[in-house]
Image (cartoon, rainbow, N blue to C red; front, side, top):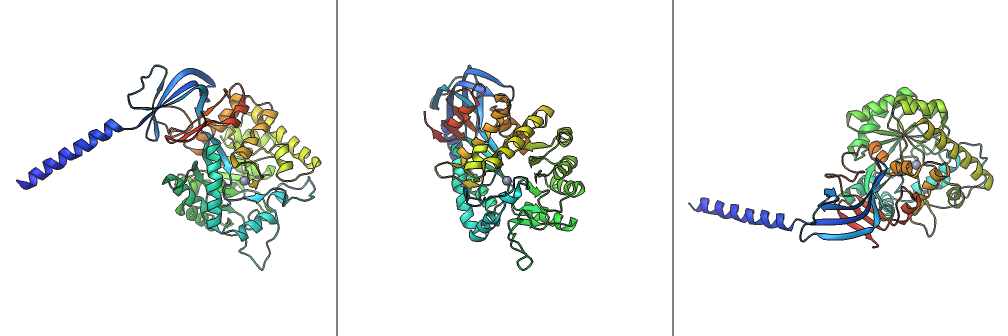
Length: 441
Ligand SMILES: [Zn+2]
């Protein structure tokens, strides 16, 4: 008898807890003056978004705001999904202009990109310090409106996995991170200076050297085991490069565990191998021919162009005017050709430098200017930063769209980015998974 009574009491208690929880379930109502749908390129006016917990509960023009809901009035703003940056390096931070000196602009890109300063950075900073650097950079990205980023490696001994977990567990604010772990590469990684036979391990753990199929399989599996959510490879930074067959092998091994592959590629040959293997994305691809762009389009390989502006190359990397001109011409021409051919493109900034007075988010957004300069429509640039990126990252059923059931990753701008894309540089409200991080209203 006593036992039954206790059970009844417990049931009653649980019912009360459940009901009180249901009654107090926190709803936030956002009044959206304008609501942009980047997928369709349309704007609706006077919409209401109801957010419950981490997700969008309902969205529409004639919704009733439940009593007790927290109301956020953004009726003078434009609301859109949180932005994506598909190529960040949260765990690298080099001082601008420290590492570029007179280099013939005809040389390949990596000669200045991964010189002694990057090697020094990896040798002088522990994984712990780099994780803390990542906390700062991640917060700055989030505050600028980037609610999702794909980290493209350069993480010491898996600083990226720990930051991703810390953000997921609510320890620190930051964007949703799709992290790549250690970059898989033919021996040497991207270090073209500073490595020699007496210090064979100096490029590790930054890079996971994998040349044979067995080594590749091990590298893929170890990355997955230690928390990578995407794999990053170096297709072509040394005189020896991964073949299309090697890349296809990596892709298949990753796919068995549900992961996609992104490849750093700077040469035409390397990009062709990536396009042929049909991986998820080619990063940079500055020298892709029309033929390779067409193959990428055919195989649904995204281009994450990381298309630096001249200003960034000059201010950040200290390029001479002549070098700036060479690279800007190359980059703008490649953007135009890629857009015309119809390669799916997603936004990625590849910021690795500290420029005093600028946040990580501000530097990331400078890349937008290259697409404006190349004449891409605002609608397409916005797609690159939202829906295209969500599809590339494989999260299109969770985020990147403002729809019922999707993550409440919501930002607001003063003007409509479909009419004025530069307004994305003035994000005034940021919500990620239902939590407000910025509200300058
Ligand atoms: Zn990069």
